[in-house]
Image 1 (cartoon, rainbow, N blue to C red):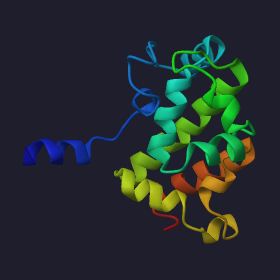
Image 2: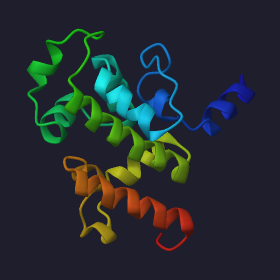
Image 3: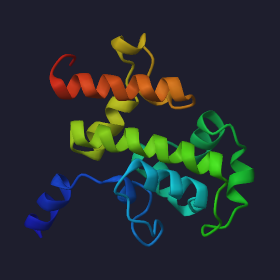
Image 4: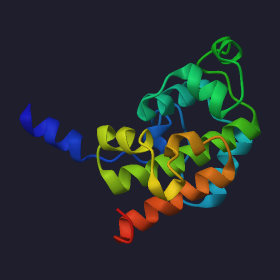
Length: 153
């Protein structure tokens, strides 16, 4: 049992894992074009729920503050219902930045803590608070790259 928990602690989820695994994302992601195809096809609502679970925030906060959609509207959707192209694409972009955070911090607890802590390089904003716009996502991803390279800690 102890070995299993160590393996789980070391495992860093990839994009498909963050979106609920191969059962929900039945696509082989090898390139950016595969992500475009996945966006065009649409991801399932259950993939959104899986990603929210990794971020450590409420479904209400994520849907209303990041996706700008009422939580009631999202909850009316069935888990296997496919989301529209724009929403799918944006959720995939958030998952890519989250995947990068896992590469840098290597544990869900550290990722969640970093995402929810005001950051000096982001004008004292929490990284998660910038997920509602593409420019904010790029800024967070750039900071993660700087941390990865040892330029910023």
